[in-house]
Length: 134
Image 1 (cartoon, one colour):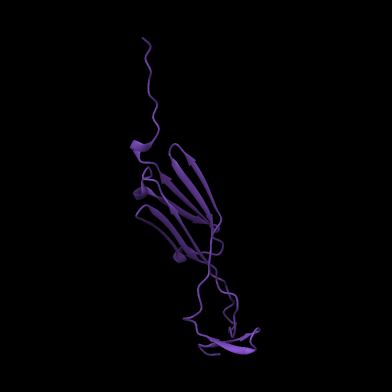
Image 2 (image 1 turned 60 degrees about the vertical axis):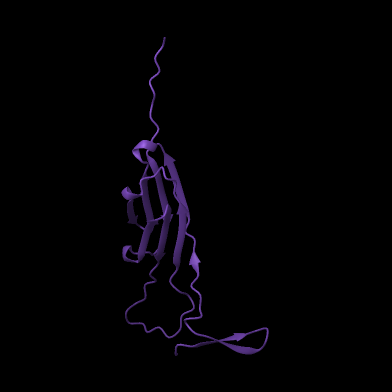
């Protein structure tokens, strides 16, 4: 096996040559649950098979980016000659309101689930206003 893979084109009966550079990386959109309350938002993203060192969470220009690559374990005594299934690559982006304090994001990855807690800015939190009679 070399760096070029031949793929038969069933419509034309000819062989199409693809190199790793021409193969596009397909990303999977992870399933996400988001809960919002007066203190902020909590986001849970399903990222099965993703270790912490293959996870990248960024906030830039009011957008939250989640990118991760799963690891497909293979026994050490096997030598891979051909693989058609790649390790999944997850990607998702969200626009955040200015009400949230992105400098205080708390992230935790456990059991393939990423939990992000993003608090509201103090001035954006709802506050109770005392009403006087008379």
